[in-house]
Image (cartoon, rainbow, N blue to C red; front, side):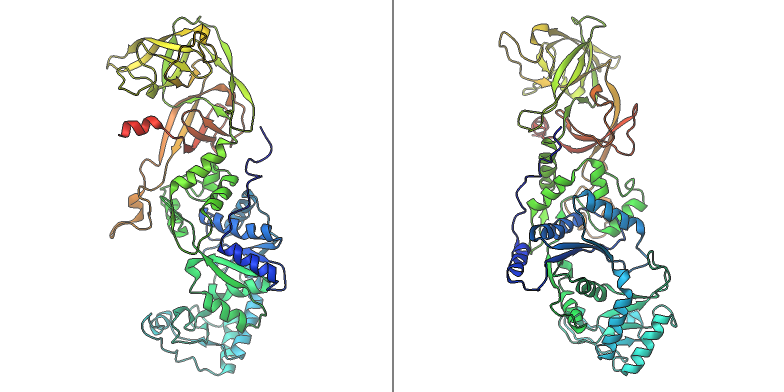
Length: 567
């Protein structure tokens, strides 16, 4: 198999408004320094498909413009963050094919952020507010009414500074005080109405331990962390658009020259998929899925276990592009990217999902032939073959036989001749039924002159089916994964319904008596294949073992017969 990725020579990502902006800034040397981006996840869950888009964008711009990109963990909430999520992000960014220029943590800036907080207080740009959380919320106003200033807004600088230092020293209980920016309680952007900067939280931090009881909020930490690192382009999704005003206010108030510029883009929204960390956590905790790496999950770990490649994910992000306005992406677009990638890289094998025994009555008992089978089609730039055994007793798909077929059914039926892939022409001569009248065995004759699939007299057959030798086949378990939800937008369920009410009860169908050709016996877990006429599969990296093979379906093939049946 080729060692070169089929997408390695793919064209550069499509141009978009962000890349055009960066290109203009680079050409004018606007920042007086190299282009710098960052991927700043919060380590409170496992990375998912939405993160893939941001990873590809930030690291992609680094690569395209010869700059740098930091991996910075936005770890300011000690209650929800954990080192296991940090390790997951590091592993998955590398799996996607990227390496960061620096590994950084917002929690390492806590000291610097506190110093900036003191300077804001001394400059009269921040104050300590002693209202309760509810009182602060009530005084913020609405989109149509202005806010009301806190009764503590005019505290003297010395008093604010003393209170802030006592907050840092741990003299107060959680919620007793907060530090707020002093901006404008009548600002039309409610985010600018004296946003909270620091709060007291007595909790042990996974990285800082008990060194801090004063934690920065997102608006305070994010922009200043970018500025500290010399980031030029802070790229984030549209839900942070309103936060841009406070982002810019803070970095300028802190005295940074040529601060980063925040630019928003539409986040990834994929049909039949949910990317809310909170809701994904519920699916895991309540047992709706087997874990964060369940192949139905949109996590990178889940997609990897399902057999999706990093090249397919990068190509998908290139295809959907980067836009200013939100739009949902059809699941078919994602599946096409996965099929297109796997089609060019994985070998073909034959596997029978629901076996029906076929006896070739005129083939000698006990005899075995070994047939050459190509592992790749002609339009794939890879070569290779394997040998497969042919014997008197075979298994074919139960769906490939009908005793009384309708029109346009081109598979095996009484008196009908079909081609066995890489084998012979066979003709059904008889069927064997059980007491209930179900077909349990099919008898056929073969034409020895048609070995390899062609008849010397030029006759044609209407169908080709796959098969395995019953004597040599390996029994395996197949996990047929499908979309996790039954509606395109599971975040938008009807009033009164929970999102779990639209979970797809057939998102996983397990087939335990499938039969696969023996050529895969020694392949490593995680090997990918196309099961001919069935779909793309991967051997499960966790559960598959010699003698107990388990394969996960990555994505189906197009099935023209299924479309005909549905008409």
